[in-house]
Every structure is written in structure tokens, then in C-alpha cells.
Length: 159
Ligand SMILES: [Zn+2]
Picture 1 (cartoon, rainbow, N blue to C red):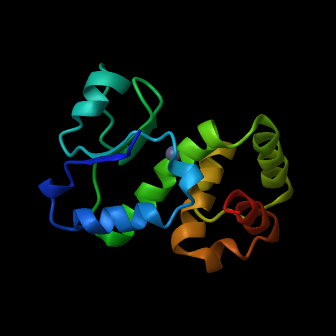
Picture 2: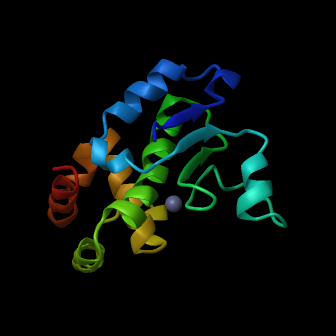
């Protein structure tokens, strides 16, 4: 199924062809079963599918496996924030759908060995740590490279 990029014409920070370009920087296998990347400033998706009762304005993007493998981007102020959100949320897809059970276990061990986190948010749990590391691998590799365990793990994920 081809990946659908939706509603990016409703903002002017980033062009649709740039979104396409940034997605194409990823290994094909990482986005194989991803169906949509949607820009959703009204949080329609969040209200209708993921959490009907509570709309959390602090959440800037989401990855959902139901009803399909969706990445939803709610809010960004500039290209840098967009890139981070995009790759972070795709990181959730890779963690949940692309990594094997063995690889996920390896990541947990790797994250335990390491004391370095690329961001405060990465300390939330091992999955968020993966997604933050994944995003930094794509846009700020030199920062992830301070951690030899994590950069080596990501190099394997991207092989
Ligand atoms: Zn996350």
C-alpha cells in the first residue's frame, strides 16, 4: 500500500515535496507498512480515534496502529520541530512493527547499559528513548554518537 501524505498543504512551514523528501531518507523497510502521515492541526484524529474524552494539547504528534498504521502531526513551529516529530513518530512504527522481539529486547538491554539520553523526554521509558534516539540519528547524528551503545544499535537498525 502506498504511503499517503495528507493535509500538508494546510500549512506553509514545510512543502509537501519536502515531507516526501524527508520520508524518502529512511530505509524503505521502515515505512513499508505505514499507511498515512497526516497533518492534523484541529486534532480531529486525536478526538475521533485515539482518546475521545481527553484531548491533550501537549501532545504534538502521535503514532497509532488502529485503525491503521498512522503517523499524525498536530503542531510544529519550524522545520527543525517538524523533522524531529516526523522521525520520532515513525520511530514508534519501527519499534512496534519493524523490530523483531529479539531486537526490542536488545534495545532494552542497550538502553540499560547507557546513561546517556539525547533528550529529557528520552528518559520517559525505553520506547520513547528509542524514538528520540531514532529521530536524533536522522537529524543530529553527532549527538547520538556520544553514546556508543545507542549509535551502534541504530546503525544496525538502519542497515
Ligand atoms: Zn513518542
